[in-house]
Length: 595
Image 1: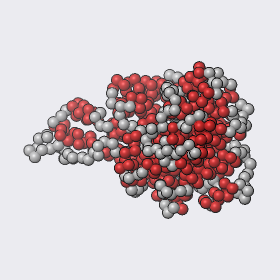
Image 2 (image 1 turned 90 degrees about the vertical axis):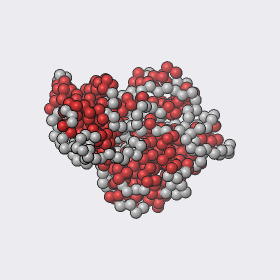
Image 3 (image 1 turned 60 degrees about the horizontal axis):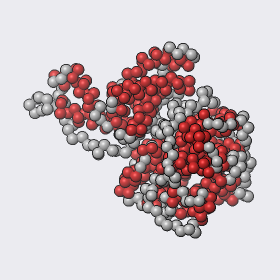
Image 4 (image 1 turned 120 degrees about the vertical axis):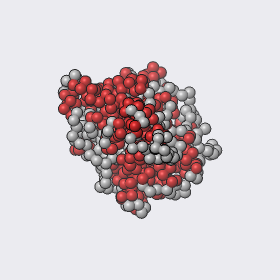
């Protein structure tokens, strides 16, 4: 059983009959969606065109890709399904275990490894894909048709991973344990803007006059999206995608078109997809939402003036996209409290997953913009591993000169000893960040060593788009967050939902003019630090970085992957919580003494 109510569709339901014929059973991913059969029908057609038809890639090669991607995403449901399918296709168990643990040591041809490398880069950091990546795959003998198939497989992997997590699908076989994700190292080097001028795949021009799906789109939207034109090597896939758009997005029996477009917009913004943010902003304009209001929804939906129910819906979808390893049945409670039905929630889950599918497609094929973008999401090559953390959101401000630039350049030039200077400059800040996240000095010391090791290993890919100190704090934050997620002890620092019990200040009284009349400087520092450490983690780390380490608002937001409004909100709330905790020590009483 999944998270949603299920109904019996009967043996005559065509998709389930097809699954029984093809697999011998109906995967729980689709049984969990039985409330809305039309969605299952559209997904089955999409799956058939993507996976079941052998073109440039064999079924074995596709299943290998899907298994490695499932392992990278730490998705047990998908990993188990593709592991089992590869067993049925005759893949040796030793090879399967190697693919799950580290594909680089599997016994595969170099050309197949090149496909896996491309797929993992697209999966881990789609905005950095460029023409150079496609050219590299082509150099191993793969045609543009093969590249398109890999892109489709990656898009389906994103879709199925997101949706299986969202509906709570149970593995159809004995679950395959997935080890910690192997760090993915993006190739060093800088791609020019010309490298990202798409499309990356050559394709014939399908005319709307003769190709019915394009005629439908032109009539319905007034244009034919370039992301579909770029796939014209595979008209059958376009037909399945357009049918999914029609069935999922152009109906209003559960969620409204406005609610659906908001979901598509915030997911695309979270994925840093400039193309689809522009598309959905334009569609929202046709629904009566101004470009400025659409920008607010994309940047920080909680500050966009939406109603409580619609805000909760977007909170829900972003949690699924940004924190899949933390997503669970408890995340449905706020939606049900606001009156959302299981049918509406299921639509939201499928729309969220479909947004991931479309975003991945666009990154992979390099479709040109249909509309001038108001926001351009520049690629960020600072990932150190396949960690499941929130992507950086839009922030204010720009990067100023970096005092560490010279030392970084020396290390990148081969002067390894110069890295010690960087350690000495930033060890205190990194330690404070990790203490703020972990709340444990000993664990922070261990994590600090890991942080500097990761920074040294990946310094070659640091391109100076942010300050080195900001990049380093981001690595520290990711390291601390990963430790928390592995232990599942505290809430995520990425969660924008108010989970601190509805904190409201109760004791904001005036403090005495000079607290040090009652406490020495040492005692004051110790007292403040003790209460900072008692703050909830997501507020503690913000107060640490802003008030103790004196990072700017922009630097702190960039390091933690937060928008400026969210950062300011947490900082204010953290300060209020800290002030209330300290008030009994410093507040002036009626007689002038310390309370």
